[in-house]
Image (cartoon, rainbow, N blue to C red; front, side, top):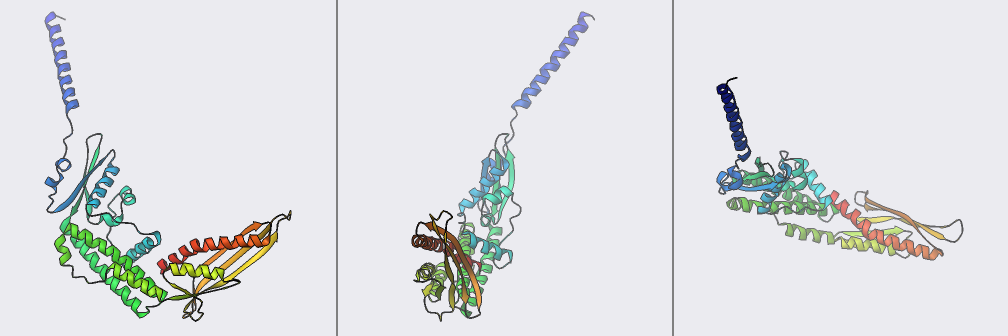
Length: 348
Protein backbone atom coordinates (compact mmCIF):
# COMPACT_ATOMS: atom_id res chain seq x y z
CA UNK A 1 0.00 0.00 0.00
CA UNK A 2 1.34 3.42 -0.98
CA UNK A 3 1.89 6.11 1.61
CA UNK A 4 -0.89 8.11 0.01
CA UNK A 5 -3.45 5.34 0.34
CA UNK A 6 -2.29 4.56 3.86
CA UNK A 7 -2.87 8.17 4.91
CA UNK A 8 -6.37 8.05 3.41
CA UNK A 9 -7.28 4.97 5.45
CA UNK A 10 -5.94 6.49 8.67
CA UNK A 11 -7.83 9.74 8.02
CA UNK A 12 -11.13 7.94 7.37
CA UNK A 13 -10.74 5.80 10.46
CA UNK A 14 -10.00 8.89 12.57
CA UNK A 15 -12.99 10.73 11.13
CA UNK A 16 -15.26 7.74 11.85
CA UNK A 17 -14.09 7.46 15.44
CA UNK A 18 -14.41 11.21 15.97
CA UNK A 19 -17.96 11.30 14.55
CA UNK A 20 -19.01 8.31 16.67
CA UNK A 21 -17.56 9.94 19.78
CA UNK A 22 -19.49 13.17 19.18
CA UNK A 23 -22.72 11.21 18.54
CA UNK A 24 -22.24 9.16 21.71
CA UNK A 25 -21.47 12.28 23.74
CA UNK A 26 -24.53 14.08 22.39
CA UNK A 27 -26.73 11.06 23.07
CA UNK A 28 -25.33 10.74 26.59
CA UNK A 29 -25.86 14.42 27.41
CA UNK A 30 -29.37 14.66 26.00
CA UNK A 31 -31.85 14.80 28.96
CA UNK A 32 -35.55 13.87 28.77
CA UNK A 33 -37.80 16.86 28.32
CA UNK A 34 -40.04 17.49 31.35
CA UNK A 35 -43.72 17.83 30.38
CA UNK A 36 -45.35 21.16 31.12
CA UNK A 37 -47.93 19.51 33.41
CA UNK A 38 -45.08 18.55 35.78
CA UNK A 39 -43.51 21.98 36.09
CA UNK A 40 -46.68 24.04 35.66
CA UNK A 41 -49.84 21.90 36.02
CA UNK A 42 -52.24 24.87 36.07
CA UNK A 43 -51.04 25.85 32.59
CA UNK A 44 -52.23 22.55 31.14
CA UNK A 45 -55.21 22.11 33.48
CA UNK A 46 -56.45 25.63 34.35
CA UNK A 47 -57.58 26.12 37.96
CA UNK A 48 -60.81 27.71 36.76
CA UNK A 49 -61.88 24.33 35.33
CA UNK A 50 -59.85 21.75 37.23
CA UNK A 51 -58.37 20.78 40.54
CA UNK A 52 -54.98 19.16 39.97
CA UNK A 53 -52.10 17.73 41.97
CA UNK A 54 -48.76 16.27 40.87
CA UNK A 55 -47.40 13.41 42.94
CA UNK A 56 -43.91 11.99 42.64
CA UNK A 57 -42.08 8.96 44.01
CA UNK A 58 -39.49 6.34 43.10
CA UNK A 59 -42.08 4.19 41.29
CA UNK A 60 -45.21 4.78 39.26
CA UNK A 61 -47.75 3.30 41.70
CA UNK A 62 -46.47 5.36 44.63
CA UNK A 63 -46.54 8.50 42.49
CA UNK A 64 -50.17 7.75 41.61
CA UNK A 65 -51.07 7.32 45.29
CA UNK A 66 -49.31 10.58 46.19
CA UNK A 67 -51.16 12.44 43.43
CA UNK A 68 -54.59 11.15 44.50
CA UNK A 69 -53.91 11.78 48.21
CA UNK A 70 -52.70 15.29 47.44
CA UNK A 71 -55.82 16.07 45.45
CA UNK A 72 -58.12 14.57 48.11
CA UNK A 73 -56.43 16.70 50.78
CA UNK A 74 -57.57 19.85 48.97
CA UNK A 75 -61.17 19.23 50.03
CA UNK A 76 -60.53 17.06 53.10
CA UNK A 77 -60.07 13.32 53.19
CA UNK A 78 -62.88 11.11 54.40
CA UNK A 79 -62.87 9.68 57.90
CA UNK A 80 -63.41 5.93 58.02
CA UNK A 81 -66.19 4.73 60.29
CA UNK A 82 -66.25 1.63 62.49
CA UNK A 83 -66.10 -1.73 60.74
CA UNK A 84 -69.76 -2.78 61.09
CA UNK A 85 -71.10 0.63 60.02
CA UNK A 86 -68.68 0.57 57.09
CA UNK A 87 -69.87 -2.89 56.03
CA UNK A 88 -73.51 -1.83 56.32
CA UNK A 89 -72.85 1.23 54.16
CA UNK A 90 -70.92 -0.81 51.61
CA UNK A 91 -73.78 -3.30 51.36
CA UNK A 92 -76.33 -0.50 50.97
CA UNK A 93 -74.25 0.99 48.14
CA UNK A 94 -73.97 -2.42 46.52
CA UNK A 95 -77.76 -2.77 46.73
CA UNK A 96 -78.26 0.68 45.22
CA UNK A 97 -79.91 2.12 48.35
CA UNK A 98 -77.11 4.64 48.94
CA UNK A 99 -75.44 6.61 46.16
CA UNK A 100 -71.99 5.63 44.94
CA UNK A 101 -69.84 5.81 41.81
CA UNK A 102 -67.46 3.35 40.17
CA UNK A 103 -63.74 3.93 40.69
CA UNK A 104 -62.52 0.72 39.05
CA UNK A 105 -60.09 2.60 36.81
CA UNK A 106 -57.60 2.97 39.66
CA UNK A 107 -54.82 0.55 40.51
CA UNK A 108 -55.07 -1.75 43.50
CA UNK A 109 -52.33 0.28 45.23
CA UNK A 110 -54.54 3.35 45.13
CA UNK A 111 -57.69 1.47 46.15
CA UNK A 112 -55.85 0.02 49.15
CA UNK A 113 -54.37 3.38 50.19
CA UNK A 114 -57.16 5.88 49.50
CA UNK A 115 -60.77 5.97 50.68
CA UNK A 116 -63.06 5.24 47.74
CA UNK A 117 -65.16 8.35 48.47
CA UNK A 118 -62.04 10.48 47.89
CA UNK A 119 -61.77 9.17 44.32
CA UNK A 120 -65.08 10.57 43.05
CA UNK A 121 -64.43 12.52 39.86
CA UNK A 122 -60.65 12.00 40.07
CA UNK A 123 -58.63 10.85 37.07
CA UNK A 124 -54.93 10.11 36.61
CA UNK A 125 -54.29 12.00 33.39
CA UNK A 126 -50.61 11.28 32.76
CA UNK A 127 -47.33 9.78 33.96
CA UNK A 128 -43.71 10.69 33.29
CA UNK A 129 -40.29 9.59 34.52
CA UNK A 130 -36.93 11.35 34.27
CA UNK A 131 -35.17 8.04 34.76
CA UNK A 132 -35.04 8.15 38.56
CA UNK A 133 -38.34 9.71 39.66
CA UNK A 134 -41.87 9.00 38.53
CA UNK A 135 -44.47 11.79 38.28
CA UNK A 136 -48.26 11.39 38.07
CA UNK A 137 -50.95 14.05 37.79
CA UNK A 138 -54.38 13.61 39.35
CA UNK A 139 -57.07 15.82 37.83
CA UNK A 140 -60.65 16.59 38.81
CA UNK A 141 -63.04 18.28 36.37
CA UNK A 142 -65.04 20.68 38.58
CA UNK A 143 -68.25 20.83 36.56
CA UNK A 144 -68.39 17.11 35.83
CA UNK A 145 -67.66 16.18 39.46
CA UNK A 146 -70.12 18.74 40.82
CA UNK A 147 -72.86 17.03 38.79
CA UNK A 148 -71.86 13.63 40.24
CA UNK A 149 -71.95 14.95 43.83
CA UNK A 150 -75.27 16.72 43.26
CA UNK A 151 -76.88 13.50 42.04
CA UNK A 152 -75.48 11.50 44.98
CA UNK A 153 -76.60 14.09 47.55
CA UNK A 154 -80.16 14.09 46.19
CA UNK A 155 -80.35 10.28 46.06
CA UNK A 156 -79.07 10.00 49.64
CA UNK A 157 -81.53 12.65 50.81
CA UNK A 158 -84.36 10.51 49.46
CA UNK A 159 -82.92 7.44 51.22
CA UNK A 160 -82.79 9.35 54.53
CA UNK A 161 -86.41 10.46 54.17
CA UNK A 162 -87.51 6.89 53.39
CA UNK A 163 -85.72 5.54 56.48
CA UNK A 164 -87.20 8.19 58.75
CA UNK A 165 -90.66 7.51 57.35
CA UNK A 166 -90.17 3.80 58.02
CA UNK A 167 -89.04 4.55 61.58
CA UNK A 168 -92.09 6.71 62.27
CA UNK A 169 -94.36 3.74 61.52
CA UNK A 170 -92.75 1.80 64.40
CA UNK A 171 -90.90 4.45 66.35
CA UNK A 172 -90.24 2.90 69.74
CA UNK A 173 -88.77 -0.36 68.53
CA UNK A 174 -85.23 -1.59 68.00
CA UNK A 175 -85.96 -1.61 64.26
CA UNK A 176 -87.08 2.03 64.46
CA UNK A 177 -83.90 2.89 66.35
CA UNK A 178 -81.80 1.07 63.73
CA UNK A 179 -83.50 3.01 60.93
CA UNK A 180 -82.54 6.27 62.64
CA UNK A 181 -79.02 4.95 63.22
CA UNK A 182 -78.56 4.15 59.52
CA UNK A 183 -80.18 7.43 58.47
CA UNK A 184 -77.64 9.19 60.69
CA UNK A 185 -74.75 7.40 58.95
CA UNK A 186 -76.09 8.37 55.51
CA UNK A 187 -76.57 11.97 56.68
CA UNK A 188 -72.93 12.09 57.82
CA UNK A 189 -71.83 10.82 54.41
CA UNK A 190 -74.08 13.30 52.63
CA UNK A 191 -72.72 16.20 54.68
CA UNK A 192 -69.25 15.14 53.59
CA UNK A 193 -70.43 15.27 49.96
CA UNK A 194 -71.83 18.77 50.50
CA UNK A 195 -68.52 19.98 51.98
CA UNK A 196 -66.62 18.65 48.98
CA UNK A 197 -69.13 20.16 46.60
CA UNK A 198 -68.69 23.51 48.35
CA UNK A 199 -64.95 23.39 47.58
CA UNK A 200 -65.32 22.10 44.03
CA UNK A 201 -68.18 24.35 42.92
CA UNK A 202 -69.65 26.59 45.69
CA UNK A 203 -72.51 27.87 43.57
CA UNK A 204 -73.79 24.31 43.08
CA UNK A 205 -74.54 24.01 46.82
CA UNK A 206 -77.00 26.91 46.65
CA UNK A 207 -79.02 25.24 43.92
CA UNK A 208 -79.24 21.83 45.65
CA UNK A 209 -82.72 22.43 47.12
CA UNK A 210 -82.37 19.43 49.45
CA UNK A 211 -84.16 19.60 52.77
CA UNK A 212 -83.33 16.82 55.24
CA UNK A 213 -82.48 16.86 58.95
CA UNK A 214 -78.80 17.11 59.85
CA UNK A 215 -76.88 14.14 61.24
CA UNK A 216 -76.90 15.88 64.65
CA UNK A 217 -80.69 16.22 64.60
CA UNK A 218 -81.15 12.59 63.52
CA UNK A 219 -78.61 11.41 66.11
CA UNK A 220 -80.37 13.32 68.88
CA UNK A 221 -83.71 11.82 67.88
CA UNK A 222 -82.12 8.34 67.81
CA UNK A 223 -80.98 8.75 71.41
CA UNK A 224 -84.46 9.92 72.44
CA UNK A 225 -85.97 6.80 70.88
CA UNK A 226 -83.46 4.50 72.62
CA UNK A 227 -84.33 5.96 76.02
CA UNK A 228 -87.96 5.06 75.42
CA UNK A 229 -87.20 1.41 74.62
CA UNK A 230 -87.03 -0.66 77.83
CA UNK A 231 -85.23 -3.99 77.77
CA UNK A 232 -86.05 -6.31 80.65
CA UNK A 233 -83.30 -8.65 81.86
CA UNK A 234 -84.34 -12.01 83.34
CA UNK A 235 -81.66 -14.66 83.88
CA UNK A 236 -82.57 -17.92 85.58
CA UNK A 237 -79.86 -19.19 87.89
CA UNK A 238 -78.73 -15.63 88.62
CA UNK A 239 -79.31 -16.02 92.37
CA UNK A 240 -78.49 -12.52 93.57
CA UNK A 241 -79.38 -10.70 90.32
CA UNK A 242 -75.80 -9.53 89.83
CA UNK A 243 -75.47 -10.82 86.25
CA UNK A 244 -78.81 -9.21 85.30
CA UNK A 245 -77.56 -5.96 86.80
CA UNK A 246 -74.40 -6.06 84.66
CA UNK A 247 -76.43 -6.69 81.49
CA UNK A 248 -78.66 -3.74 82.42
CA UNK A 249 -75.59 -1.51 82.83
CA UNK A 250 -74.40 -2.38 79.33
CA UNK A 251 -77.88 -1.81 77.89
CA UNK A 252 -78.13 1.57 79.60
CA UNK A 253 -74.65 2.55 78.42
CA UNK A 254 -75.83 1.78 74.87
CA UNK A 255 -78.61 4.36 75.28
CA UNK A 256 -81.49 1.98 76.01
CA UNK A 257 -83.33 1.52 79.30
CA UNK A 258 -82.62 -1.58 81.36
CA UNK A 259 -85.58 -2.67 83.47
CA UNK A 260 -86.97 -5.52 85.58
CA UNK A 261 -90.47 -4.98 84.17
CA UNK A 262 -91.32 -8.28 82.48
CA UNK A 263 -94.13 -6.64 80.48
CA UNK A 264 -91.56 -4.80 78.34
CA UNK A 265 -91.60 -5.66 74.63
CA UNK A 266 -87.94 -6.72 74.68
CA UNK A 267 -86.64 -9.24 77.20
CA UNK A 268 -83.03 -10.31 77.48
CA UNK A 269 -83.55 -13.79 78.83
CA UNK A 270 -81.51 -16.90 79.39
CA UNK A 271 -79.92 -19.17 81.95
CA UNK A 272 -76.80 -19.25 84.09
CA UNK A 273 -75.36 -22.41 85.66
CA UNK A 274 -72.28 -23.35 87.66
CA UNK A 275 -70.67 -26.76 88.02
CA UNK A 276 -68.15 -27.82 90.64
CA UNK A 277 -65.35 -30.27 89.97
CA UNK A 278 -62.21 -31.33 91.84
CA UNK A 279 -58.82 -31.95 90.30
CA UNK A 280 -57.32 -35.45 90.34
CA UNK A 281 -54.95 -34.60 93.15
CA UNK A 282 -57.83 -33.00 95.08
CA UNK A 283 -55.79 -29.86 95.63
CA UNK A 284 -57.81 -27.62 93.32
CA UNK A 285 -61.55 -27.02 93.01
CA UNK A 286 -62.88 -25.79 89.72
CA UNK A 287 -66.01 -23.81 88.94
CA UNK A 288 -67.29 -24.14 85.40
CA UNK A 289 -69.83 -21.54 84.26
CA UNK A 290 -72.23 -21.56 81.34
CA UNK A 291 -74.34 -18.56 80.29
CA UNK A 292 -76.81 -18.67 77.39
CA UNK A 293 -78.92 -15.64 76.50
CA UNK A 294 -80.83 -13.93 73.70
CA UNK A 295 -83.17 -10.97 73.33
CA UNK A 296 -86.82 -11.90 72.83
CA UNK A 297 -89.11 -9.55 70.92
CA UNK A 298 -92.36 -10.50 72.60
CA UNK A 299 -94.46 -8.72 69.98
CA UNK A 300 -93.53 -11.17 67.23
CA UNK A 301 -91.80 -13.87 69.29
CA UNK A 302 -88.46 -13.34 67.51
CA UNK A 303 -85.23 -14.38 69.24
CA UNK A 304 -82.37 -12.04 68.33
CA UNK A 305 -78.86 -11.12 69.45
CA UNK A 306 -77.80 -14.49 70.95
CA UNK A 307 -74.96 -14.23 73.45
CA UNK A 308 -73.28 -17.18 75.20
CA UNK A 309 -70.34 -17.50 77.55
CA UNK A 310 -68.63 -20.49 79.10
CA UNK A 311 -65.39 -21.11 80.95
CA UNK A 312 -63.96 -22.08 84.27
CA UNK A 313 -61.94 -20.72 87.17
CA UNK A 314 -60.21 -22.55 89.97
CA UNK A 315 -59.09 -22.16 93.56
CA UNK A 316 -58.47 -24.27 96.64
CA UNK A 317 -62.00 -23.48 97.83
CA UNK A 318 -65.07 -23.73 95.59
CA UNK A 319 -66.56 -20.47 96.95
CA UNK A 320 -63.50 -18.54 95.84
CA UNK A 321 -63.44 -20.34 92.48
CA UNK A 322 -67.06 -19.27 91.98
CA UNK A 323 -66.21 -15.67 92.92
CA UNK A 324 -63.50 -15.73 90.27
CA UNK A 325 -65.99 -17.15 87.76
CA UNK A 326 -68.39 -14.31 88.53
CA UNK A 327 -65.63 -11.76 87.97
CA UNK A 328 -64.80 -13.38 84.63
CA UNK A 329 -68.45 -13.25 83.62
CA UNK A 330 -68.73 -9.60 84.64
CA UNK A 331 -65.67 -8.61 82.61
CA UNK A 332 -66.75 -10.54 79.51
CA UNK A 333 -70.33 -9.21 79.60
CA UNK A 334 -69.05 -5.63 79.81
CA UNK A 335 -66.78 -6.10 76.81
CA UNK A 336 -68.09 -8.96 74.68
CA UNK A 337 -71.82 -8.36 75.10
CA UNK A 338 -71.33 -4.64 74.53
CA UNK A 339 -69.77 -5.45 71.13
CA UNK A 340 -72.32 -8.16 70.32
CA UNK A 341 -75.23 -5.81 71.04
CA UNK A 342 -73.66 -2.95 69.04
CA UNK A 343 -72.98 -5.30 66.10
CA UNK A 344 -76.58 -6.53 66.20
CA UNK A 345 -77.93 -2.98 66.02
CA UNK A 346 -75.65 -2.19 63.08
CA UNK A 347 -76.72 -5.37 61.28
CA UNK A 348 -80.40 -4.35 61.07
